[in-house]
View 1 (cartoon, rainbow, N blue to C red):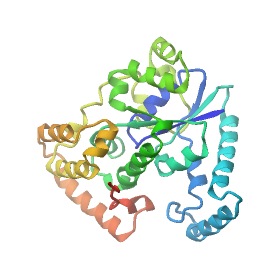
View 2: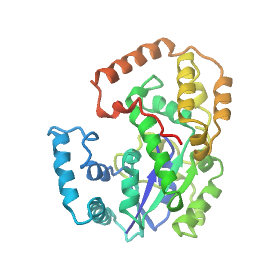
View 3: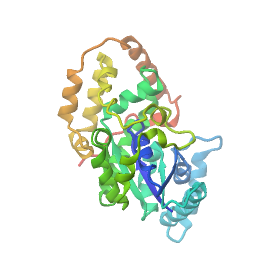
View 4: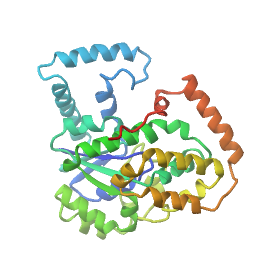
Length: 319
């Protein structure tokens, strides 16, 4: 069974794509397995929070890895064999592919690509400001919560950019906006990449995404909210990010990403900034945002938050 991995930030449309691909009988899936994370993070001292001393454990694990005949290559090979067995035993059919969609796999994207030379890797990009808005709308009822997702917005995006750049010849890249605006073209691209010539026909024959289900704990919104491929979510970010605090933060974030990286993802810095400036100004949540941002910064600086938040200050390594 060959794995398919979807790499994206949370709230980028990976659940929508998962449900589309799951319409084909050659693809088995589960909502968000997460299982590869602890496997590939085990030798890394700073990425697991545990009741035991993981920093000490990771050094011991790294010693074992380095003692293998081929070092990290052997570790990745054996980890891949383990995951293949899990995917195979999880599957209820004799499908050719198993699709593993877990957004935090941005932490181990390069490990997975190196471990699975035969696997398929789909990078899904979305307007970063739409991602930010969706994080607030989905997980905090529209209130400021971005300090909780620093690892995704900064380190995660950096990892995805670097992995895509390094392995561009082995992967495929699509935009969320294209999936919902022109699904036929996106499906044709994936059909060719996955060698499933009838993928477009299977998807076109579906009356709705409501017929596609992956039981388990997955995306709390996308899996059940949308029964059709819809463009409804393309512009809602402009309303969510309309107050002065959010507009200022959004401009700084887009500037941090930079024109070159946005172009690689399929976006224009000038276009996004123009849309942000043109969004009608609203004062809703302004006072709340000021307090929540201060609270978030205090937790980040004080180190009282989870390890996810330590990466707020990371910066792209630019040429």
